[in-house]
Image (cartoon, rainbow, N blue to C red; front, top):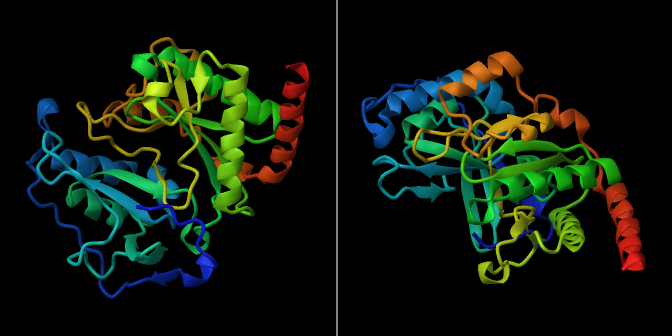
Length: 323
């Protein structure tokens, strides 16, 4: 979908469509259908996972318009991304009417366990969410950097994550969190207080990425075209825009073994065995029992990026002076 963060007065054209005319009734259908054929995981296993993980996952979905990735014939067949709620969804599914550049979307809000289970029963495997909440969609409450390994070089992902952690937290005063994506790399996130819009946040994220790459020009890059990266890691700041989404913590990924996007403690980056798919729908619960959720206090650390942007100005000036 096209980026529409430039639309004027976006908040005034956002309309919630909350419908609670029916009592939620979830009936598992075709539970034995193999959604992960090579792993032997049926739909009942995915629905069961989302019912069990709901208390941990729902805080990261609450009030965020949802992009659903569905695989009606299992992950061996081509799936599809869906933003609009289907016409056959029951009336108790909460939705939000969201403005886009050429019209409107009617997107699902997954705010309760029943909705999560219902969507899983509709073969939704992946849950992708906006960086802003429904009442202030043009004002993100989190900053996200997506780090994927060039040529499978996960050690470079770890190095970039640590560099961002040091820059954003130690030098710029933001609080940072790290998560495996369950796919290829890591997400670095910083909670924001939602006082600045996507234009400001995207520009800030770009400047952060540019600074990091200037300090590490042989390893990191902001080159958009892959042919220009030359085996360097792309510090992806592009998710920080109105129309963009990020994978939700604890979402399953549509890959063999059903890996899960998993919040980490920063100290875990020193584990040589860590990779983007270290945890799956089976191992995640033992992990939570032992370690809890490292992101459980995410919102408590929300800060304004304004002061951090001023600190970045100083760092950029110092870099120019040294150069």
